[in-house]
Image 1 (tube, rainbow, N blue to C red):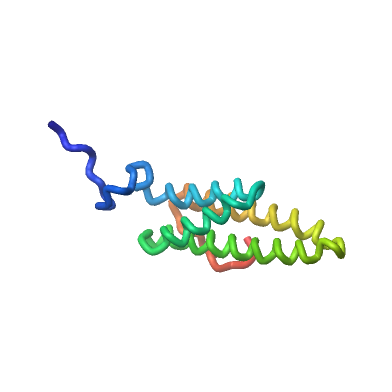
Image 2: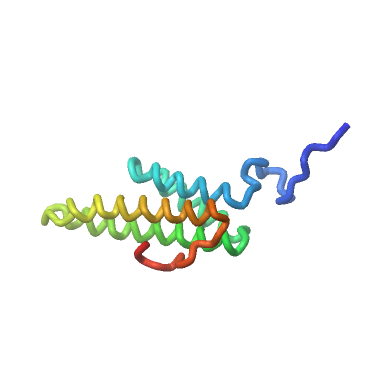
Length: 126
């Protein structure tokens, strides 16, 4: 009998589909993009990013840092937008936050799919 494919992580609890270094950051980016419409999946995404960051290779860690900062900055800007809704400025800020988050996720995905670290993960803008 042949043995099943070896598990490179050494952890039998990790499914083979999640053993690729790029899979979990892709999932987080996807959860963030879905979170633009419901919010809850972005929270799940940041939890996964925090949980996966320590064991990841250095180039993937740059994506996790970028994802974590994207979550917290978008939350901050969204709260500011909600506070400013009665003044009317919030109606401009909230869509801008959604666009900003979507652009960051798309750029992060493009760097991830190229197999490269995100060049400026601690940057506030794009």
